[in-house]
Amino acid sequence: MKYRDGSETHLGDRVKIKDGDAGVIIVSLDTDEYSADWPKEIWGKFKSGVIVRTDKGVLVRFDDPLPTELLDREPR
Image (cartoon, rainbow, N blue to C red; front, side, top):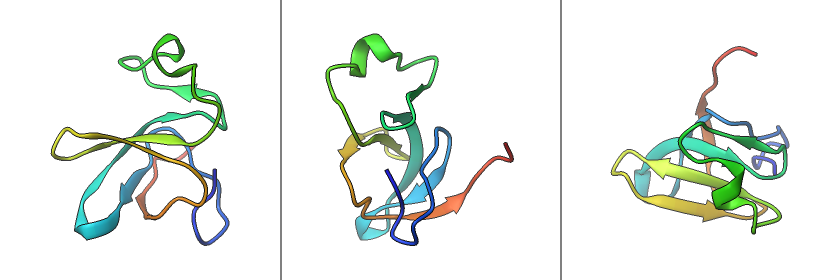
């Protein structure tokens, strides 16, 4: 999955989604990345997209294109 600017999404990316909400990507299905708290066994039924945990604690699944922007990324 990619951001609107064409860059690839990754686990741990902090993102801004619609209505000014923000959160962190906890699962990136396209890159096969899963956080320890949200393993593949839980999300493996989905084939693409990302799961974002918002700052309010809500889990939101997005498919391409990701309607958001990258706010911060830990160095790889």
